[in-house]
View 1 (spheres, rainbow, N blue to C red):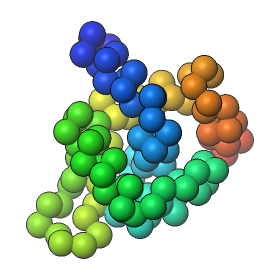
View 2 (view 1 turned 90 degrees about the horizontal axis):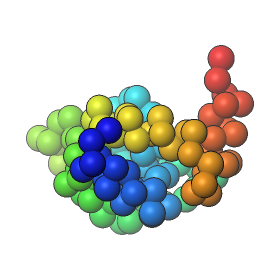
View 3 (view 1 turned 90 degrees about the vertical axis):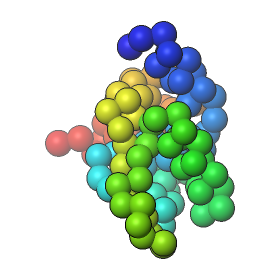
View 4 (view 1 turned 45 degrees about the vertical axis):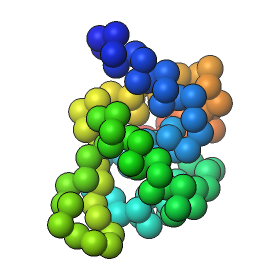
Length: 110
C-alpha cells in the first residue's frame, strides 16, 4: 500500500463504527439496513443514523461506494478495491480490538 493508503487505514481502524461497517460489508452490495443486521454477526451494533454518517465518511475516503445513487431509500453500498484491502488487513490485525471479529471470520471459513 502506498503512504496515503496507510494514513487512511490508520483513520479506519481508529474508529469502532468504521471498522464494523467495513467488516460487515464483506463483498456484497448491501443496503444500510442489511449492514446493521450483518454488523450484529461481528458482535457490534450501529444505529442507522450513525451508519449514514459513517458511510458518508467512508465514501469520501474512497473505501465505500454507492452502486446506485438514483435510489432514495435502501441504496446499495459496496467496498472499493481499497476497502476490500482494508477489510483483509483488519482480519489479520490483532492489535486493535478485532480479536472477536477475526475469530468469527475464521470460524465461518470453509
